[in-house]
Structure formats: C-alpha cells, structure tokens
Length: 121
Image (cartoon, rainbow, N blue to C red; front, side):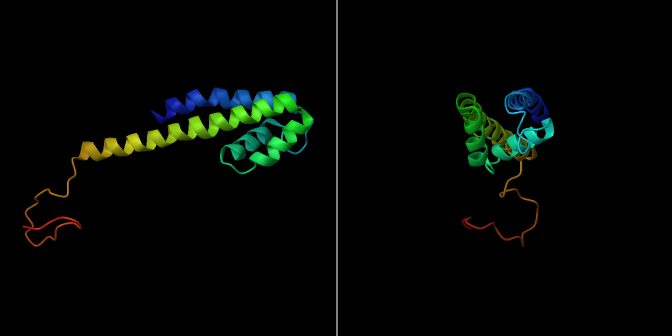
C-alpha cells in the first residue's frame, strides 16, 4: 500500500521540480540541476529552508514564486506527510488486531504479575 501512494506522489513531486527548474534555471544555488531542485524541495518538505527558498523565488518571479512555494508547502506538509502518518497508523492497527494480543490472555503462568493499571481480584 505504501508503494502505491509513493508512486502516486512521485509524478507530482517531479512536476514541481521540473516547474521550478524551468522557471528558476539560472540560479546556481537552489535550482541549477534537477538533483539540486529535488534537494531544495525535499528540504522545504521537511521545514528546513522554507523561508530562504520563499524569499529567493519571490525575488526572482514574485507571482509564480509565491504560487509555487505556497502550493508545494501545502501539498507536502498538509497532504503527503499526513498520508504517511495514516499509513503508519493503519499498519500498526493491522498488526495489532491480526495478532490478537491481549494483556488478559491466560498462558498458564500463575506467577505472572498483572500489567500496570490492572485491578487484581
């Protein structure tokens, strides 16, 4: 399931990289090559260089720079990272309920202490 979602996100990420590369290609620091552009967007996705990239792109091209930065940060932080959190939570719940693990399972050991916050009779 995780690979399907990553395969769905990858074309959008590559599209943002190609858009930034075509608009800001003459920048030697952030957008000179595809790998530099992908690195810049990945660091923006993790919240590292949002302000620096936003200031640079709006200085070069105010309207497109703002649109690109706002839409990418919204997509990356609000959509993609929340999707990853849902995947992790779903995987955890699947494992938890498939194993049928319970603190109250009787395995025949009378010497075993009850788990914390459990009342004893």
